[in-house]
Image (cartoon, rainbow, N blue to C red):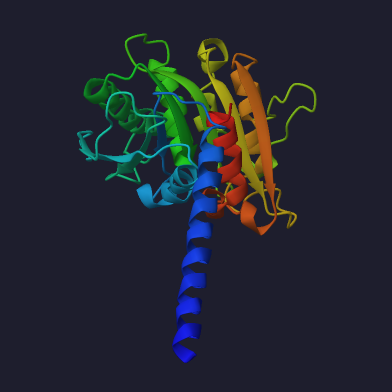
Length: 291
């Protein structure tokens, strides 16, 4: 009798395990059919002092929900040379590229101005996009950037956005962008925005350096601007004032194909937690890949 019960227990366990596995597989298949099937890669750029690890919560969320099965890494040396970890086969669905910068504190490069430093740092974005095109032949890309990565991407757009020979950005997710200053910068917390136009009352150097984008920002790009508000009275994510992030709208001057803002409230709106946040994961997956 005891052996019979053991046998029945094993059978029930196998049935339950199989049922759960089947249900999970069915759910993943269902989710994957909700997303576009595109060969356009999505490239993730991390922030200051960080690495590809800050991108993995987001990239793995996308993979786990059936967006793609392919995540590769672009390791960028200090001299800009890109080496690849993994491969993207022709026809791969929604491939993802995690960028890993060896020089991850590259905005202070001994230049005369902050804007010159960001401009030089943006060469790493150029290096990655050029290498992506050369290696895999991509002519279109999507980009997700956090913190410093946003400034690098936007200075890249200022310098190279009109170059038709480079991959053209289609969708751009900006997370914790500090276009008009960090909290530690003088004057950043005194900036206000015109309630009608969104124009900032003051342009900090990094913002002023991008002002030409008001006339040159590529009009095919759809933008999702995500910022955090701790709701502790600081009107910031603890590092970036909300007005700095929201200054992007005036900078784009209605040139973007579409523009959306998403405010993440509470403790998970903290600067570094924004890239470890399921609400952010869901938002970027919906924006980039949902049908």
